Image (cartoon, helix red, strand yellow):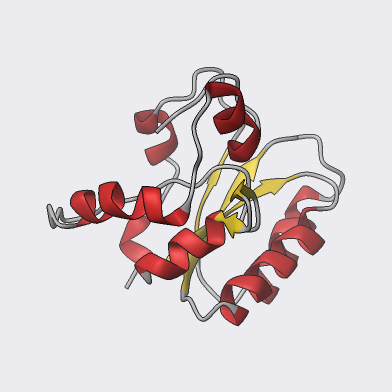
Length: 152
């Protein structure tokens, strides 16, 4: 399910007249998972604790599906704190953090390499790749920068 504009899911759904809940999303997600593809990725939107509606959060959907999580870190000022808090929340919610991806939002971030090294030291999962700021963002362009073979 996708909404326009690209805003928090609960706001976009409200504007579209749709109520997003974990219950409403479980059946379509399970249908996709039942296809048993070699690799299935369910992309979140807005972050681990982003609201869906009422009291449901995106994290509740991941927990209901009991899926391993790949954390995408938007690399810019403040990302270390944000990433480590999110990794802690994922663990506290009882899910496996399978890996993380560095999404280089601001290539001019001060001490970029040092920040990436700190993330690699402190996030208890492998870095699956560094995605540079791309002129044209496509699945194929992003995939060139990922090492999904590092996943268990």
